[in-house]
Amino acid sequence: MDKTLSGEIVKVDEEQGRVYGWAYVFTKNGEQVIDHSEDVVDNPKAREALEESFIHYVKDHRTGDLDHESFGVSRLIEAAFITKEKAELMGAELDKEGLWVGYEFNRDTPEGLQAWETAKQRGSFSIVGRGRRYALAE
Image (tube, rainbow, N blue to C red; front, side, top):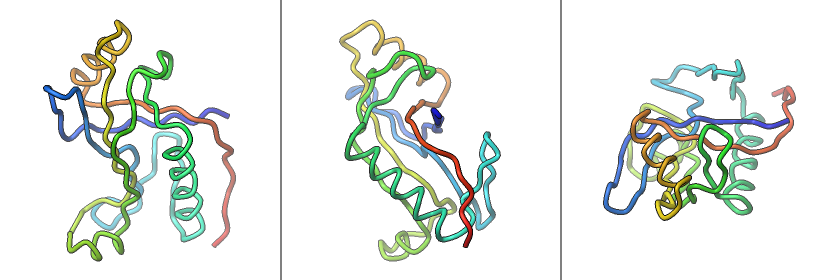
């Protein structure tokens, strides 16, 4: 099964062709988030599974796409699996837990330039990957 994620852009670096934001949020203001697929990351095993999937993506894939069709138009340049515990260790207070990412767009190709302009206009970016959905008991 393909799993698609859309992330909210919170920073744009026009000069470098980079965007930064949350690829996936599983808690906000201490409340559980239900994503657009009605999935939840609501227990330690689910968080561990999500973190392992994210690590696999970071190590082995690292590309972004446009509307889950034009692949390889951007490259992952920054990634962190942020939990309340990790934020506290960094001395930070965050209202979200989830996947923080940064992507650099290849603006030297028509597809990359189109993806860059589309991402900025929409304020979001997309990521695609393969995975299996299954329920995890605590």
